[in-house]
Image 1 (cartoon, rainbow, N blue to C red):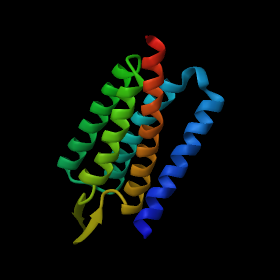
Image 2 (image 1 turned 90 degrees about the vertical axis):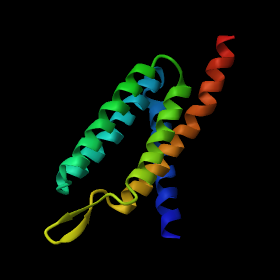
Image 3 (image 1 turned 180 degrees about the vertical axis):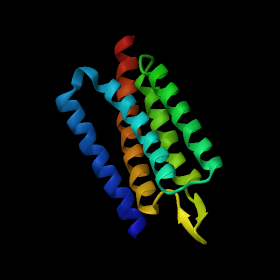
Image 4 (image 1 turned 180 degrees about the horizontal axis):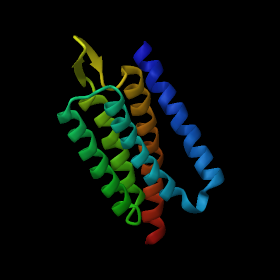
Amino acid sequence: MLIALHILLGVLVGAAFVFATRTLARRHELNVYAAGLVAAALVYVVFAVANGAPGRWLVIEFTALAGFSLLALSRLKSSPLSLAALWAAHALWDLLIHADAVTHAGGGDVHIVPDWYRLVCAGFDFALAAYLLPLSRRATAHAR
């Protein structure tokens, strides 16, 4: 039940983010979503550094940050569908890669990313992907 609430919270925050973006930055909407994806990947780097992740996790997080950043910025002008796919991929990153992201520090296990955060983030990411998917269909239909 708590898992579902965390994911629902992420969906609600994602919906609020979309509403705010559509209201305040309509002309630059895709830019905001691309920048948001970079920020979402950066948060994991911050968690890894702050929680004393071992070097291999830092490499993983910095590689993911570089990959999501390059893809988000290069796909920005191509289509909302690309951004939808990247947001969905980030949700999978939240759920699969960080499910067991634990480091052993000071004799105990320390989760690199709190479970609640990765669930809220996944809900947020899926909300963005779900919003962008029909937006991409409208852009495709408009181009015809």
